[in-house]
Amino acid sequence: MIAKYYTTNDDNSIICELCPHNCHIKPDKMGICGVRRNVNGNIEILNSGIIASSGLDPIEKKPLYHFYPGHKIYSIGGYGCNLKCTFCQNHEISQNVPERSNGFRHNQPADLVAKAKFLPENIGIAYTYNEPAMFFEFMVQTAELAKTEGLKNVMVSNGFINLKPLDELTELIDAFNIDLKSFSDNFYRELTGGRLNPVLNTLSRIKESGKHLEISFLVIPTKNDNIDDASAIYSWIATNLGEDTILHINKYYPAYKMQIPPTSTSTLIELYELAKTKLKFVYMGNLHCEEIGCNTQCPSCSATVIKRSGYHTSLSALDSKGYCKICGYGPIAILD
Image 1 (cartoon, rainbow, N blue to C red):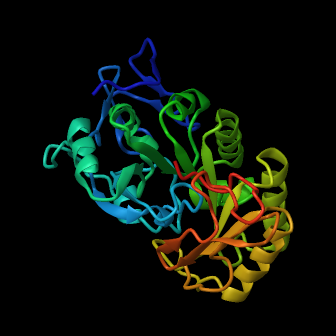
Image 2: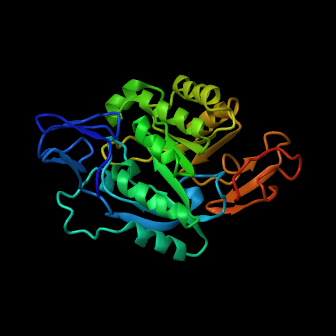
Image 3: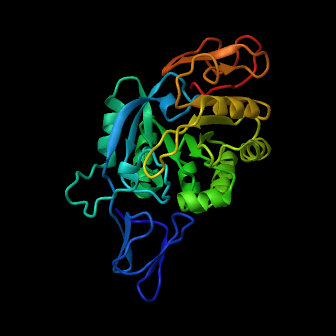
């Protein structure tokens, strides 16, 4: 598969232009992601078509709460990531990239789309688990074919991507969930190896594209759980993306290199209550919750329009177009 978004220099070194690292890759070396290698002045994609994990998931697991709620989606992921989060929950596939790809099955886009169409109650394909931009070209080809077959495309991403390739994706992806890990550039640099501003640019660009957007904020004790940091996130979202932007505030559990204790429920509730003063649709995730931070209320009349218990979802007061049956506010969710 032919790689996109790179420039070859006179000395056969390469500038990869897929993500904001803009790696300068010397011959026979790889970029930070570990999956794009310079071979004779061209990029060799080491993970193209390799599926490390797949499954038919509830759409709420992505998480997407306002995009075809109650439906399922075929989810696929590969190897590699352009960030090095010390708390990564999928580090087995994001940080452990096989040195050789010849021992793996290289799936074809047509095969994945055929499987997606075969699976019961499935609405499309979600590119998730690791960072999907790491198999950008394969994702684009798969998404193009899926779109022609009437399937939906979903991307779950860290948002650390350059705007030109992102613009190509917004032509194909129907819904995004983007991680906004902190509003501190130091947090991004020290704990992820990335930077904040490119992620903010990604969020703004997706908003401009008109595609469905939901945001995930993983709350890590002592790292990004202070009120000021959280308040800055919420204010930025409300001002730049709109008060109706969907936000998931998620509980952290020890993973990979970070072994500090899990986020307390009291902290999550405090940050949830603060977010509700600035945003209309806020949820708590990664914890069992039946009464707070799970259901969707109409911002106009406060009626519960979507009820959730675990991954069981019922549309209690939404009409077929996603509007509140009680007062007509909406659309609250995409249903068709």
